[in-house]
Length: 438
Ligand code: GDP
Ligand code: MG
Image 1 (cartoon, rainbow, N blue to C red):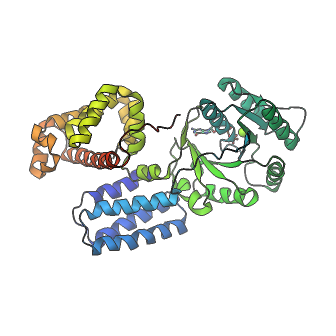
Image 2 (cartoon, protein in one colour; image 1 turned 90 degrees about the vertical axis):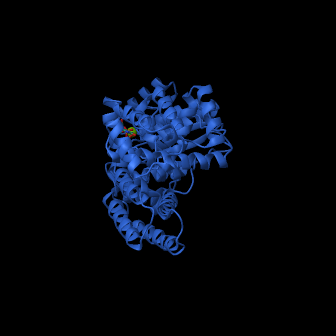
Image 3 (cartoon, rainbow, N blue to C red; image 1 turned 135 degrees about the vertical axis):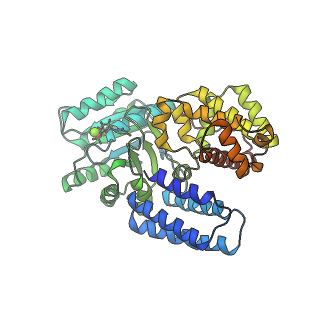
């Protein structure tokens, strides 16, 4: 998987104090291989590498401290730029209802995602209506109605006609009468792009003038998804992209390429079949995930939802005052363990390889290992992890019966977390009040 592989490249680089031109070349070669293997568009990969290399040379010339970290930052920033720069949410019309049209190939996840969006909007107190404009398979209307019932969202359907323009207009009129804030029109897809489908969607677009045309792409499709997206975009000038099925073994390359090629923002990602399995897409967080720096921002948000208030406050206060040490790290890990679903949180922790999660699910040994490692350190080492040199690492490893590389990894993760904490503590004033609801 893309995420794992890139993570390895940078884990290697990060371990270095000094970087040579050769290290960078080798690192870049590896990044290139990984991106291409993951199905990232070739031209994008080349542009990306050119930009990174140009800046990397600067890092070398300046003989900067922590060059590897700087390189990771450059790659992170460029990845973010490639993924869309900043988050873009749904465009809400000033005059309700906002009309959203779902488009995409058959099976890409339009109907499921329409339901997910309706659920999310409803939770934001925006009354939402679904419209069944996929009329060719009766089962499609049933599917949307079932979803609507389960979510308690009204569904407009008309089984007496196949005129989708008429259906969509009637559904929207019903939405206007009911003062709905949003109307989501589910449309029919085909197995591949064909003229009839595009003609129908073009007519529909002209008739209902949607505020959003969301192209839904199956994240498992890889590079092909970019071509399909291009086809839809040429005909419809889409306003955004939703990438589904990123919970599976998706290679992720499509996600990396669609924005780069179309310059249309990825707005959400689907991460499961259930109605709540829809996440906002944040380019910089995704870049962070790819680099295995861990999605600290999400982690903190999640933690804030569930953390024992006083414990968390105490920890926050101390961290703000004295910086974070390994005791705090351990106590944070212990807190998180209480939060469950453990593997979800773990996924967000720096350096945690998603592949490990299967094992974690079966057996929360890893937490025990982390505990064992920290407990094998002297109090001084826990307070000042910087003093933990090679021989100390060997001693700790022996003490807790874990391999040295596991000790190293823990220290790397801790350092990364410390860095992010520092950044957040300094910048935003710490108060994570603006946490997105659902
Ligand atoms: P449509 O033909 O575009 O309307 O696609 P559907 O909404 O009917 O979805 C097709 C299949 O993909 C269904 O079995 C969905 O449950 C599944 N699906 C949709 N989104 C996701 C997702 O994010 N993750 C997973 N695992 N399955 C999804
Ligand atoms: Mg459908």
